[in-house]
Length: 578
Image (cartoon, rainbow, N blue to C red; front, side, top):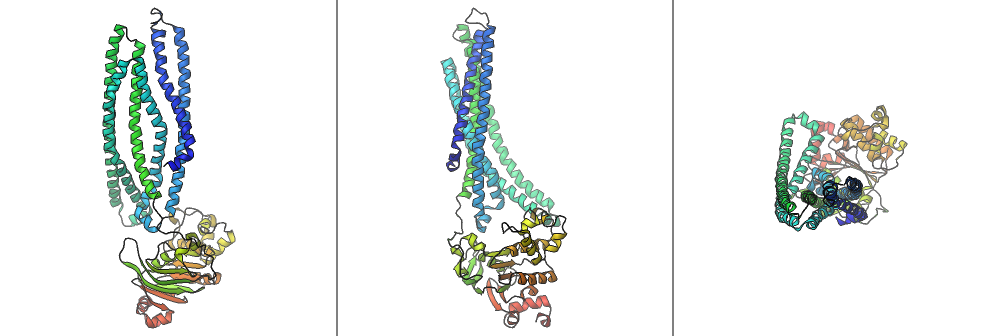
């Protein structure tokens, strides 16, 4: 944590100095009140005759001191917030940067809800920890020990009375903190669960409504929320018992001071002003102890959150970056050399001994039954995962040698799920190309067969996309994603079942326009429809993670039973399939 705090340690020091000033003012006020009571009101040093002038002078001085203390307190708050919020800002940005470097399996391990909680709530708790440490530790330490010292200066008897009560209060504090500390980690984990449910239900609200599962989801959320409330209540009950107990101990000490003080006043060993000052110092000591409760509570919760944030920050990227910048003499070639792959945590191979060579400028289509490994090929090409065995070469270089940004710059990809952002259609199309001009965006939209509906929209290319593209149909979202891929000046274009929502006429027009616009580009088409793949130069047929056939449509019809079965199931008879 010091790595982040040290950048703003000068603000913390300034804040601490202002807090020192505020506490000194608080400790100085009872002494002034003692003068007003003993000398101004009772006139103990003037034969019992009060001194209104002294009351006015000391009162004005007290008002000035209070204003000074208030100014110190306000400035302490300003500099404390500047320090802890700046530190939290840096931590949040670094945490988000770290998350952006995670591989997919790391994302799955943490979970989206947990990562959201860590970047938002946990970082806030860490910021509060720092702020409480700067503000609370200085104030509590000075107020507690300063009050005890001032009490002893007034009367050793009063100091001893309070000192006897202090161990009992600290023991109560320690017991409560030890009971509450384990609850903080559980509280954050339950908050993760609630965020997971919220994210799933909000993003999948259409499915929830279509399946009439609102009641079930309400119950599921209620159960998670109930667990969170139960933990919070345990935490609150602990501190609700502790505060009255400490208050009771302190008021017992005040009662003893009043009883002993009344005897000393009669004996002439104390004055009423001394007793009022002693009670004020005792009250300040109580405030210090109660503030110590809040400090330990905030620090315990903040430290639990810090451990969760550190878990993210200390996670090593599963995919190591290479140092190759991507400049090669060969462009647009792809080769799988005996590639096998298992997803993390699975013993079942998703790919088995893949041998495949894609030539520059070639169009390769990949087809196969659901779950045969088609999308897994794309995941490996874009290096979302590393191969378990074998090598995957792009332009003759193993993908593990590339810098990840340099590798992915070679690809324009429209993936199986069309992800759109809550910005304009123009910005969504130009998402992967900074500084793309309007003509280039329009040309990409025309190639992707998206121009007709974009230009018919009320604001044209400046039409805003709703969250997750809710104001667009499935086919429109796919065409925007395809336009985004086409706009990118890449060597490879990958379409992972990205035209499945298009009718055959629109799809045919799309691929004709694509061939005319980017003839030099190597294209990889993942598809389920024979009508889509048969126009490719070659077709790779996958089944159970292996390539069981590769060739033209006619060659596969003669040599590959899997491909032939797919054709017959879609075309209906042998004549149409041929």
